Length: 495
Image 1 (spheres, rainbow, N blue to C red):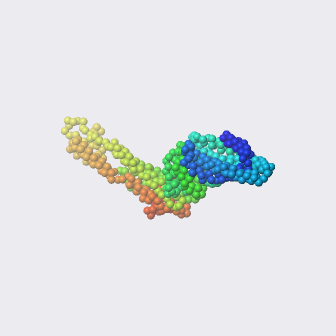
Image 2: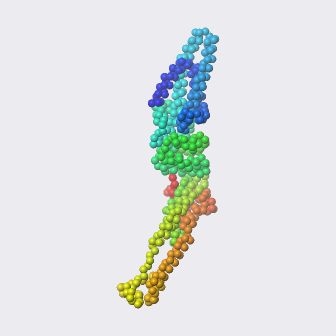
Image 3: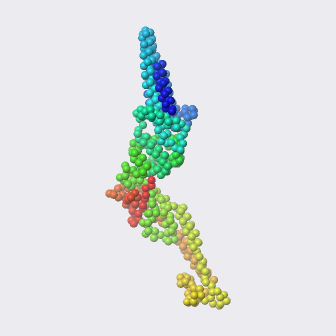
């Protein structure tokens, strides 16, 4: 609706204004529109401190109205100049020619002013359409849960200009690269996606893998929790646009130079599918995560060498081990190891508690005849007499008539002493063993080195760790397998 009002006003007023102002003034104003369109982006930063005073505080609307106000100021200057320009021929015909010639000239200027006025009005609409299209383009893509104030009107105005064909006409004067618009569309795809995995996948795009940890700009974007939160909940576009890192990207950082190095069509495909055709030749390049459960199946020999006192803890904790491996396009790789120390302590505590629950007091059999002088134990076929197992007799030295000479209390004391000794031995052995150290021993080079270099050898890859060790690597069925003797560390894509 707003677009039709703007076009109607310009269509009616421009010829009328052109008739009364004359062709000379309108030509000057037409030139002013061209100059204003070129210089407005340069002048608008100078108005940054002025805009908050007129209640324009949003960074988005400041960037929208800033060039618009600068455009009008430049046009107003040329409007004033037009009177000085008109004075020169007007004065010439008034002083050098007769009245009839002057009137003919005035009538010619007025009538031709109608055409020039229409031309100037059309130029004004193109400039307005360019401004509306540039900013309305973003508001349509980042709709979010609810559009901020003014976005609905801006979007409808842009749609109206598009229906009337002004969008295509104003687009011919747009010097912004197509790559920038492709990037905006890609970011909008991430913003509008309901899955957080899509947003996480962006950081795994091969060219970004080396930039995020090494480049301060990319690192600040990736670590901006506030910006992540806005994307996760599809927050207000005004807040996203006003984010400090976003503003740095748009105004201060060499983002346009970076865009030349990125295939945005391939980036969009990667964000949607997790696969890149451009970088598919080197399958090892990417971000990988250890599949501890599958890897542990190839480590039986190492597991068998671990003390039985802590083996259950090591097996449970190994499943919680996390290793992130990042192989970049420049032939380098880095690893980040996380051993679950807190869970190891938890498993140790649970095991100790279970051992205490499993302790049972062995009750000695007592002859029901308390008046008997001899509580004899006669291991015979008589099923009515209580019998000790052979293991118990061997352990406590009780067999046959030897047991008849020992009192019940003496045996009970011996039993408790030996159980206490065995318990102390087990606890001492368990305390001396370190589950975390055993896990790192199993992990080998991954617990010693955090970086290295990779190279492709035929259909295989070779990882040369910083510590000097070299391991063979295969990429099969989408998984990365690092072979270390008879062990295999299996990684899956972390995207």
